[in-house]
Image (tube, rainbow, N blue to C red; front, side, top):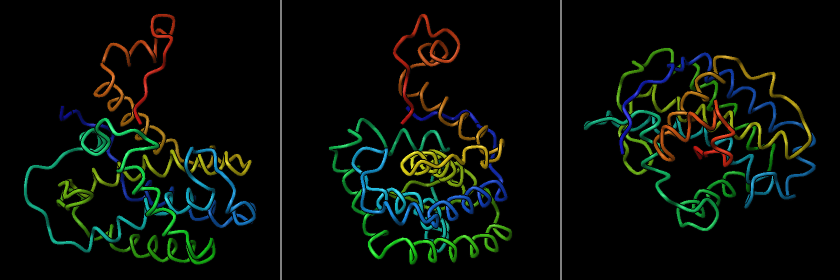
Length: 219
């Protein structure tokens, strides 16, 4: 299934402000103190989760360095449908490799990770002001997307994993995320849940929980 419905577009300002929040969170002293402890996200240490969160910025900078892509693009929902498939979130080869890359990203500790993240965010601030958001790039598994659509997927990763990391270390920073960012992420996740679990189940989960006691999942 390849959904084509549009979600509210994410502008570079919304994405970059959320990236700055991720940078600040990873730099919190409590994150460094609990770096090797288990996080709230199964299979990840706090450090590994921080590495995974940072990659929502680092990968954008890296993919923008690639050649302009050709081929039919997918939107943010289609990207997640394609990439996630039916993979088990803990034991599948895909998710094992995702965790391995996160651990490698965080291997040298919070200070260097925050430095790389900050450097990438500042570079993106300049680059995203100059690029055409409709330009196509090839991302994970050679998936073709517009830059705008890929930023939507990265915003989902940022918002979801900022919450994971904050909960892991006992911080409450949810109100620091812009309402526009929440609106974009909620729209992507609702459409993704409908694509993976069915439209009626998703609507009932949101509006008629008495008819859908088992909540649907997007991710």
